[in-house]
Amino acid sequence: MVELVTPTTKTELRAMLLQLRRATPREVRDTEAEALCRWLPGLVEAGQTVCAYVPVGSEPGSPALLDTLIALGARVLLPVARNGANGVPLPGPIPIVGGPVTLNHSQVTGNTATRGGGIFNSGGTVTLSATSVTGNNPDNCEPPGTIPGCTG
Image 1 (cartoon, rainbow, N blue to C red):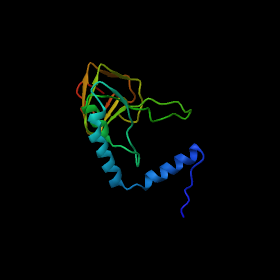
Image 2 (cartoon, helix red, strand yellow):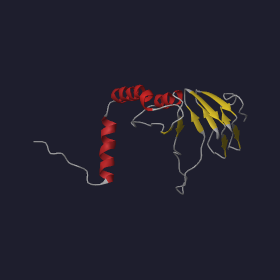
Image 3 (cartoon, helix red, strand yellow):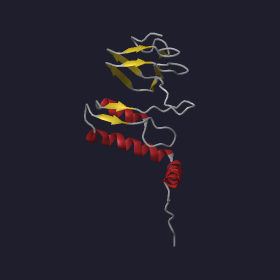
Image 4 (cartoon, rainbow, N blue to C red):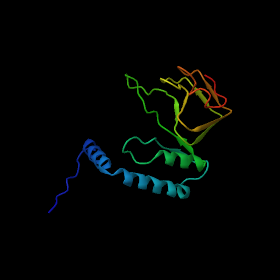
């Protein structure tokens, strides 16, 4: 007889879920992420706002999920993922990793990073429409010349 041990605290439950997630083979996670992308057109309509995240390691989802949401016309909100030594969320660049991104009627200002304080383009296509990228440290866009309309 197998006896299931049910976690009694939130910390124990999180630890168990993390262990199970890490034990899931990459092929299974990839297949599940692809299936989720196929379901999105039936769940999301243009103009809707979707809160999401960029998955890291064994977290569920994929960057393709974000690309699919954008292609469907959804407004995608991503969390601030860094904190300072005092625990206060730090502003940082908008990372572009593959896929097209368009910023409409936006301001990207007051962010700090090692490179690309405003926008860091790592292989995507970025379009700025009525958008200003200014006052970011150490620069506004990186690598130089990869984002039309964005200077240093």
